[in-house]
Amino acid sequence: MNDDGTLSAKNAEAIQAATAKGVYFVPNSGRSYTSFQNDLEAMHLRDQPKQYSISYNGGLISENKGNRPIAINAMPFEVAKAVFEAGANNKLAATHVYTQDKLYIYHPIEIDTKYLNNRGAEFTEMKTADFDQFKDMNVMKVIMALPTIEERKEMRRVVESQVDPKKLAVTFSSGRYVEFNPAGIDKGSASIQLGKLLGIKPEEIIAAGDNSNDLPMLKVVGLPVSVANGIDVVKENAKYVTEADNNHDALAEVINKFIL
Image (cartoon, rainbow, N blue to C red; front, side):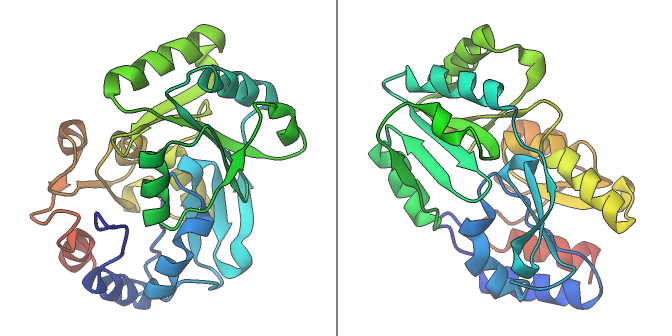
């Protein structure tokens, strides 16, 4: 996506050309599937049968037709509750709870709210820190927005002092979030999971990313790609680094080079 949260026309055209050749193009996002429906429309993939999306850092795999769930990798309730409570106790943090279909935020902060609005992500503000309201829902992930990387790392330390780290998959993203998924669930595990369902081997998958929550995906596919402005550790794990950055049609570069 461009910095303004939009999909460029050249990227959309390249994606359409790739899918016309029978290639699956699968958005693999930390966000909810609801937030990128307009982008699927631009790709001509919205509400299409036998086309797929991954959301919540691998928490949910959906068929685009009717947004039908085909794999749900939710957090155990008690684990999600403990992670949330650690975030709720930090007065500087905006704590997000992603259920299967909706986003709830406790203590929203302006800079985070603007970022979400820019990307079409709708949310409901939690007025209390009572996590039991989610008892009968699938909680996909819990994340905290904090201003600095030092604060985000400290939040991870606090969470892991209260929750067995072996029960968690932890990533950092977007220069603002520390994210908690259940152990073993990430963008990479979901990519392999979907590949198995489609009869596609890991070595036959291309994945493109720029941030640390993309690393699990880049480490398990045949062709890991970093965009030009990916963070250093992403570039180090890539077999190809694009000449273009995310604002200059990097996906189109990848598709034109390796697929078309």
